[in-house]
Length: 589
Image 1 (tube, rainbow, N blue to C red):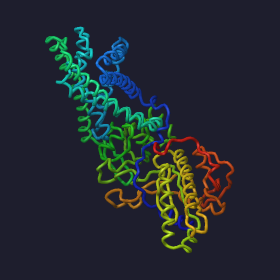
Image 2 (cartoon, rainbow, N blue to C red; image 1 turned 90 degrees about the vertical axis):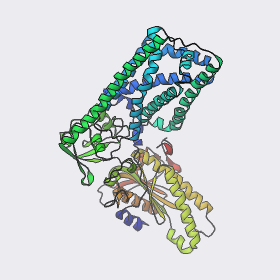
Image 3 (cartoon, helix red, strand yellow; image 1 turned 180 degrees about the vertical axis):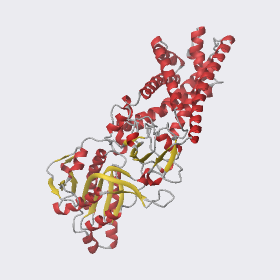
Image 4 (cartoon, rainbow, N blue to C red; image 1 turned 90 degrees about the horizontal axis):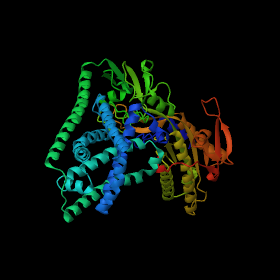
């Protein structure tokens, strides 16, 4: 088995299905709200204030399911907060700030190429003023100018049934816009990852309840009461003029923002004075002023961006191969993110750097191939991604002896049962089965998470595999004289993840695999089980990264070919003495 794995690891590893780096390791970062430049923080806080108002308002609507009286009683508290002088001032300031910063950010774009969720959030944000301005003019405008009281009895009568569809659509658009923003902010937090099913339920349930509540209350009111709307024709005309004026201003600003993007793009077509070179010899021309993320998107070069270019994650990070010294120093937001991931001086965020000279860069986080229709390079795995991962080798002991003494059916049945259950145990803990090597398995942990998470996943998978071994031994037939024994080797280190065999193809046809010394070392550790008569041989690097405790394990130092320093290992016959720190469930990684 040792010869097989060593030889196979030198030739390259077989395919696993393409995976996308979700950057889950950044979910554990703390204090993300405090990062970003002052405009990003201000936009976030203003958005949260507006969301708090919507949450209160929509919850009030939902009480219509109970009765109109319940809506009125709850609205007293709602208006006490938001129609007070401080509350109204805060709400108005938050709305103006959020709109202004959104338009400013839109106007700063160099391209309309963006991810689907960014486009959806932008489109919904531009639609909201169309219906919201008339609503505000009717409630706040008439109330301040003419003393109109926008109680539910009056507002429901005005809206039902003529404006029911428009009002319902506005509610849904505002809510979806808010949910997109909240999701792509909170997704960086581990607590949110654990509570995502609950959050999704809330995100669907509240707007449904709000729609049900206000429509049901309006319907009952129309059937049981003849309400006189206390708005005169002159007041209606006044409100209409206010709506037209405000819509003209708002949509004029929107048009200016979009026109600014178009002008920058057209000017960029005429004056492209720098070039950006990507791995594989791909070189594109660009104009100074745009961010590297925008330049890449304009030219169909895929770069990951979980946060949408807000410097809240590090998925757009690139290694600057040439021209790093001439770039402007990282700002506060970029510095905070790069320091959290321990990035070197040649690593920058594509969403923050604005090249004014030629660069050669290499994206460091893979992108899902389906996100781009580019004919050249489909994702970063095509170029190769270097990151720390945990590699596992699993071997069935004395398999040669079993094959020589048993019927073919029994051998194949046992082997398939072992491979199926062991690979399921690996996947259950977030690992990826790279390949089956006869009676052995090679797996990778931490491809889409941090090395620490990958180490915890790998050790947890070892515990599952130990249970598989015991189950197979207990259930084996009497024809198998020897006990069923497995051996596992684990090591953590840098590996190159790439599509081997993709060169010369029209896309990413080659298999995603791991290359590097960490693979050979993990295979070597698996064979050390024979020397120590153990079940698991794991390097100290894995134990330290997982913050695990090992009691009573045999320790040793082995010499690895090509390494000056010996490698410290732990050999365990049973994993009852292995204790893992509390970690996230596999499904949340």
